[in-house]
Every structure is written in C-alpha cells, then in structure tokens.
Amino acid sequence: MAAGSLLTLLDDIASILDDVSILSKKAASKTAGVLGDDLALNAEQVSGVVSKRELPVVWAVAKGSFINKLILVPLALVIGTFAPWGITPLLMVGGLYLCFEGCEKLHHLLFHRQPKDHEVAVKKLTQLEEKPESESDKVKGAIRTDFVLSAEIIAITLGTVEGKGFLPQLLVLSIIAVVMTAGVYGLVAGIVKLDDAGLYLSQRDSSAARSIGKSILWFAPFLMKLLSVAGTAAMFLVGGGIISHGIPPIHHAIEAILESITHGGASAVWLAKIVPPLLNGLTGLVAGTVVLGLILSFRKLQHIARPSRK
Image (cartoon, rainbow, N blue to C red; front, side):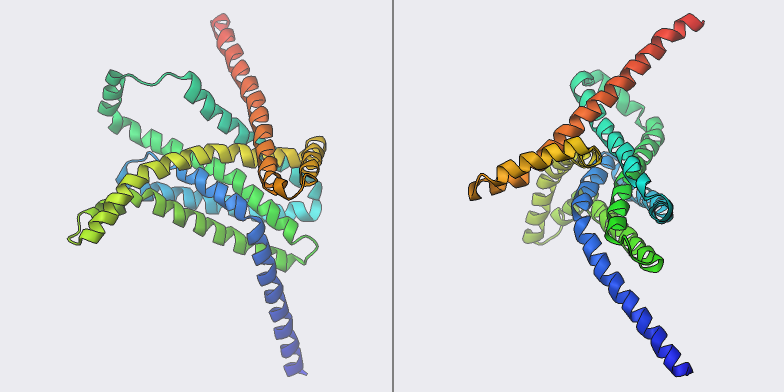
C-alpha cells in the first residue's frame, strides 16, 4: 500500500513537472518580444556610467529586478485568483508610464539645449560630487522601468497558465521570473563591458586579437547609440501595445486595418508584420504626449502658484 502510494505521488510529481516544462516553454516564447524590449531599455538605462561602476550598477538593477519579481509573482497569483479583472487596468497604468517616459526623453532631446563647451568643463570638474546622485538616479529609473516590463512578462505568463492548478502556476511564474531576469541582466552586463573587452583584446600580442579588439572598440559606441534609440522606441511599442490591447475600440481598429491588409495578397504579408507595431507605437506616442502635456501643465501651474503663497 505504501509503495503504491509512493509511486502514485511520484507519478503526480512527474506529471506536474512535465506540465510545468511545457507551460514554461510556451510562456518563454510568448514573452520573447518583451525580453528584447527589456534588454534594449535596460542596456540604455545603465549606459553612461563610469567604466569601473558599470557592473555594480547592473548588479544593483538586477537585485532590484529580483525584488520586483518577488512582489509581482505573489501579486499575480492573488489577482489571478481573486480579481482577474484587475490585471488589465494595472497593465494600462504601466503602459502609460512607459509612454510618458519615452515622450519625456524626446522632449528633453528636442527642447533642452545642449551644454556649451565651458559648461561641459564645469560639469567635469564637479563630476566626482555628482556621480553618487547620478548613479543612484540611474539605478532607480532602471528599476522603475523594469517593474513595468516585469509586470507585463508576469501578466503574459499568468495568461499562459490560466486555468491550471496553483502549484503549476507558482512554478511557471517563478521559473520565468528567474530565467528572464538572469538572461536580461547577464546580456546587459556583457553589452556594457563590451568596450573593456575590446580594449583588452587590442593590447594582446596576437594580431588577430588586436584586430578583433579594435573592431569591437569601433562597434561598441554605435551599439550603445542603437540601444539608446531602440530603448526609447521600445517604450512606445510596449506601452502602446498594452494601451491598444486594453482599449477595445483601438484594438478592434488595429485588427480591422490588419485584416484589410492581409486581403491584399501575398505581397502584403510583410506589411501585416510591420503595421501593427507601428500603430501600437503611434498609440504610445499619442498617449505619452497627452500624459506629458498634463504633467508639464500641472508643473507650470505649481510654479505660477508658488509666488502667491509668499
């Protein structure tokens, strides 16, 4: 009897692990797109840090990301069990935040003047005093952005395991949380240290190593600029995608446009792949502009009201 019970238990465990493996692969494939955006955003967020502080900053953000997951996984299980209707509104708030951050970056780029040479010199002289605050701000900003993207990853994973038992849901969510965090920040660490690797190789005795090192040093700045652009674009694509899926009229309009394109024949297949992300990005740009306009107006009103209080 005891042996039969043990075999039954082992069979149940094997069945659960098999389900968890299949569900984890399915969730990983669905969240792969968000993973790319997460990588671009976080690499862009931690760029510009002094070389010797790059890995500590990445590690600090990674620890913050793990803490985000420790908050989000139990929260997702609670919401999925007791209030599944609350997932979409929470994602919408996160999507609006991403769009606002993207528009704020564009606003700063377009309307804030670049520092002159003497201002750059003054900044360099005071760099030692500014570094701790600047580094802290970068870490906090990266962790806030990670929270939104992590929430989307967890929400997508929760949708994948919907209807399964509590244990499979817990295991799949935990596996995705750990694997995604380790994968993203492992790659981010490699990207930000790319120039150091190039410098090391360029100083080797081997001519092949020196050639590779010089190529890496030439390519690294372009990669960081590309990631900066991709990171900002990802804010609109991810945030706009969340908003468009959460507002039925926008979602249906995009589906209708996509359907009309697919009826255009085989030549329009590539358009069907490009148009939805572009429309999501446009949705994100409009939403972020509205939020940024409201916040800037509020700040302006606060500034006008301050003298009257004196």
